[in-house]
Image 1 (cartoon, one colour):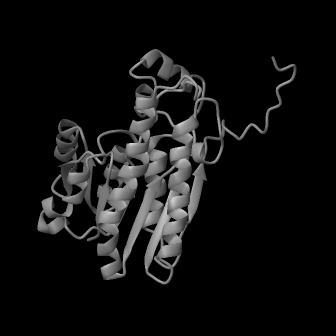
Image 2: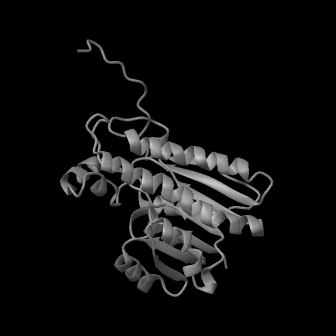
Image 3: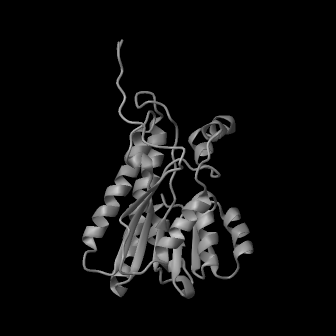
Length: 251
């Protein structure tokens, strides 16, 4: 039975992915900072789910991850780098610099550090799969997306370069790039707990859901090992790239 490690498992995409992969018959390590949420999920999902408190921005915790796992979960076959966040939508000249640092520490450094810890064990066995949760924000610029979009562009390029480094090995890499997705804490976090502002993002929109992303992950990990999806961009039908804009009569 393959072992999957999912970061950011306490809510949103991560929680839905854990549920789906347990249903598919995998053993799943769900990591997050909020231990209480993980324990609640463990009660629901049973013995094949291991709740593991982990803050991906803490170097010592990531370095010692493999040492802290029980034997039945030590051999990680699939790594799903889902932990990430956006903070604020101010233009760059008004943004909170601490928010920028937090996004980089989580979306970039945490993801690459965890990958560096787990990947050598996959190379030793010549088997594995890394799935990174990127974003359409890494492909298309939008107002206020500044560092968040840049961090997801890093995920996109890092995923592509991993494929290059792993050429000739039986290790797959996919970057999933979701667009507007509701039913998560994403916008509540972005707007620093302003639920009214967060709810407005999704009003009158038939958005994609965490379950849509979980089903996509399920399809990927259950696909034949001889094929690799390099990247997959997913938007709700209600969303599309809006094209280039031109500002006239600039002041």
